[in-house]
Length: 456
Image (spheres, rainbow, N blue to C red):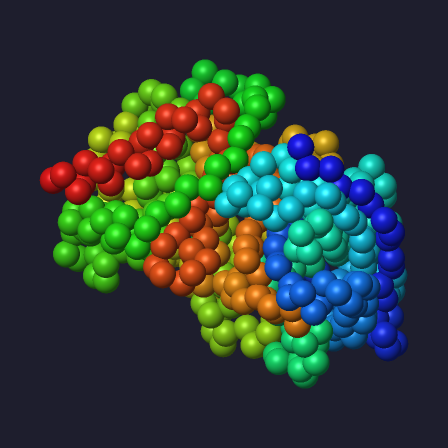
């Protein structure tokens, strides 16, 4: 087990005065995951940086205070308002920066596969504190005995989605390298009618806001939530990705138009493997949650650099028996149909749906806060998020690019991420959390299909 010692904690505030007051949040900011999302970066700084003890911390502190001038919402605090809604108090209370050290080396982490050790490298958020006291961003710098470092971040999902969080990290690194800001954040959430009253009822049926199917014979998710989970990183070479795409597209009806994408293919493969590994009955209803970035789907598109949440979840549904017995392309077609529903009109309809709700708590995932009433995408369901197009890699604070970047610890059954391979060689990585009882079977099904395909 890796032992990490905490040396110091600092509150980093914007280096210049920023807007002081309440900022309305959009509907997308206030539903789904509203707790913090962890990510982690590992670096091997040059000997020159290692010898200048203290320079890495000083560089991070100084550049963080300067970038918060532009991204000042991250230095504020959330507060609850009527109807389980949230507002952002822009009060420059600051970000928490933790300094830590360990006698471990980067080599001790092997290929950086998920392990309990990673938990000690990402800042822990004390959700026992009132929400108005919680920093919206926490950072932990850990120095290892080999000279390597890790940078763990926890960023509130109520303030930034993946695109916005990575935009912030990229701009922070730019300033740390001595470069000017690249793309200023667009902070006015009024473009999504944040804080406005509803103006119309929804014009679509939004099944994504209903609770997903239960395991047959169950009356609630209580028992499934109790079961132990484990996380695996499953790697796919470019050849394996292409093989799966061919499998999906060989059964694609000609009227479906363009070939199935990497996401439509890999998400479908994950869905089918999960149904198999979980041992579902053929008639078991199942849903897959699909996270859609609406930035370019709006008309007009959201302004460049929009900072906040602009993603919405839609669902594809099916029955386990059909999904596993029919060709891979069938599951891909269900996923594509769900994605193609998301137009400008659909997004505004979903916003109206939420604005018309007297209370948003049933749409909020508050598992980390000890509340199990929100949506649950564990067995028999799952969620598959794509990071394939996000600017994840090449984050250089001045001591070189990371040797590894990935999601921090997560332990929710059914959570999965599809990430591009770090080397840009067309490979992919699936970060998957499943119940312990199902993971080994999942891995077998995951790779077995490609082996059979190569034989055929």
